[in-house]
Picture (cartoon, rainbow, N blue to C red):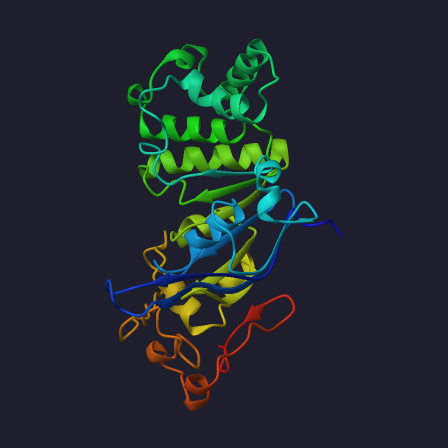
Length: 317
């Protein structure tokens, strides 16, 4: 069996927050124990509502923040803060907003070569330029774009530049944090096709953060559904979309647009408010909004169980 390029076991991230200057700190559990393996050449999608912990997970995998607990392993090596500088070359991120992720004062040439200047200072300038031009061509841009500024490009072209920058250090893993949500629908398909082509050519592993389930359905291999910092369902794309077992996953999928206007659609409207992440509820966090919840659900939190199709629910569908 292929060795995973990224593995997480019990990964946690907590924050101490205050309501006021003299108030007692409270613990915000942004991520409360995530397990997953990401194989080379595969795409693992993380989906869920805003505030479920998707972006927090992205910050941990890219070593922007240190986990509060659990372990993260990249290419067989457990991640420690002392190793961040060397391991960051293997993990790069493509941000959601192509307008905000590029320095407007720098030319594209400088933006692309900067990772090499920082991480490979011994590389001759001519080799850095050759590498940058190669990446520009790889993402479908022309040679004359090399000396232009970001404001001279469209949103889709800027995202191509962001992808090229992420590839400059030859990473094994790309964290894609909502990479197409800020783009027009017609451009989204072009960027997704580019990512698929790059994955096939370079053997990249993708951690794909998204709220757009229609994109996930066509792009991912496996899917983790998150709710308030926890994984509630984990399965292959085909299994999850054909037979979601957690009520929350079922409700999410019921809102996905369908191309067939004649297809029967039973949309599930969730009642109640999303609990606060500051409330450490004793049972299932989804119980206050779940139509299947019982006293057992409210008293004790279910664990993620199963072999191929994992679900954290006492009353799976």
